[in-house]
Image (cartoon, rainbow, N blue to C red; front, side, top):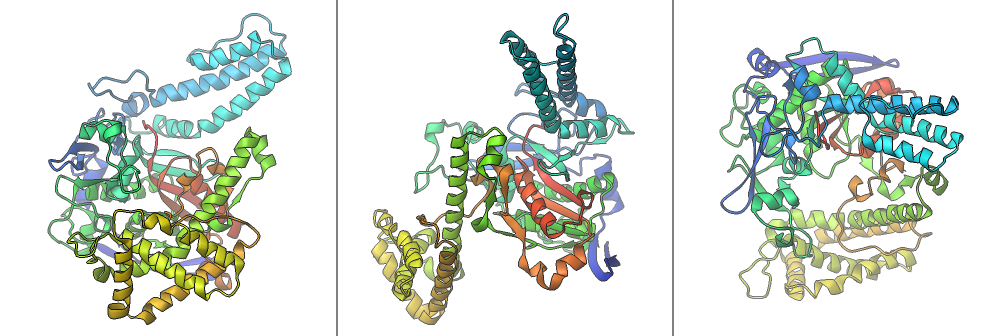
Length: 606
């Protein structure tokens, strides 16, 4: 069923008219979803294909003990209260891993730590009479650390201060545990409790919902990119050791190809498209009944979207607008497109833009007060600057990259060597075309020292090209010839002019800073920064200028409720930076008007 939702929203005297197609799942499918019937797959299985690639499929095991092993993802939606509170990760033999902790154990331990630190404060203030107070359920590590304070003769004030800091740390680290425990333990129906995780994005007061939990990032990569990073888990699947991992042309670990369900080639656009769907799923409500191309992974993603709507309803949050963090993949775009249809709200895909060139980060004094060393501060500042320069390198070369992709049918027939049948890759063609472009730009610059320096630093890497196995001179000549004969020099000149304008634009930003750019770098990702540094970054993502024109953003969305989506949550830094950008432009908007949603939490779940 497709419903057209016509709504009028009044925000600060401005009328907003929304007309959205709402996905309404069938009663049969909804009941099956809520009751946990096997129409919805639950776990993830990995296997090795005959051709040496790796296969991923989502299985149908529904029992409480399924899919809780390490190096996996828990895709179950519902469970019993007892299992969620007391269930533990299983070993390969199916037994509980005694080193892991259940949600109940995490909760009891955190509460015991807080009680213990408070008892120690009272013990010191009362003159240290009697024995050091022990609390049942306390872990040995905490007990041993505090005992050393007394054995080393720490003063009363030092111990009290340390206890207070420890209480604040435990409370901060336990928000997710306490929040999820309280929701599960208070559930009215003990036989059917949703497993989603809730917490507060670190450094903010904004709540997040994580639908699933994972212990292996390859699950997320398999869905987002259709490839896998090599690690100990892929080694076991392939039956190899770390030394036997395949390398790419640059000597780095090669990303592994994979399949879904043994024969489906991963395709993010297809996974989230409204084509080729099966009966009983919400995509079918658009009347698109194609054949094939629908996998167990696609079905899992259908479930995730439905589960998101269910979790938001349970948490009592009804958003007005959906936005997402900038992403290196199309996952956010496709997921949010489907989720916006499900919720019947507007999704703005380019609401935030990347701004790493103007990145701000905490100053040295602030970092030192948080326990960082002077060496850490220097490393952080250096890393932030280098990443900004790397991003410029990518942005300046983007017009050439797009040009190559737009005309790949013309370029992908170039041979690796003259008279060779082996074809060269688009990456190699891009390298050679960049040299051609930069040489031309260098000749056109008018005594701009910084711009000339920028281009020459790119050109200084050209020696690397001539050391490769392909015939770079041959490729360079073929590129030049095909531009003139099949595309037109005028078209390419426009690309050159666009690239030159970018060179000059960024050189103006950097005239006060000496630096050296590297050649052909990947786009910036938050994971480029070490985990301990990420919470101290800001201005990496800003609200797109388009939404600030004529005060449109301030008028339409001042009191709107924002749902912020991202693929997964690790340190929470990406979400924090997005929240900061939103709060900077909408200072009157409170944390009650924001909610974050992620598909998976990158740690073992409950």
